[in-house]
Amino acid sequence: MGQLRIASGADGTVVLGWDMTAALAMAQALGVNPLIAAECLPVIEAVMVRKFNEQRASDDRASRLLGR
Image (tube, rainbow, N blue to C red):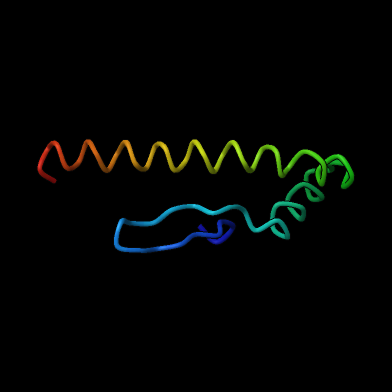
C-alpha cells in the first residue's frame, strides 16, 4: 500500500488518495504522456478512493454481521 495515502482511526482505515508522484512515475514508465496522466489521474483517483472505501465499509459490515 505504499502508493496510497491512508488515515487510520477508531473506525478503521480509510484511503484518502494516491501518492501522485508514484502514480505519475508509473505512468511515465508505461509510456503514458505526462500531460494526459496529469489530467486523467485525479479523476481516476477520486473514483478509486470512493469505491475502495465503499468496499471496505461493506466488508466491515459483513464481518460484524458474521461475528468476525
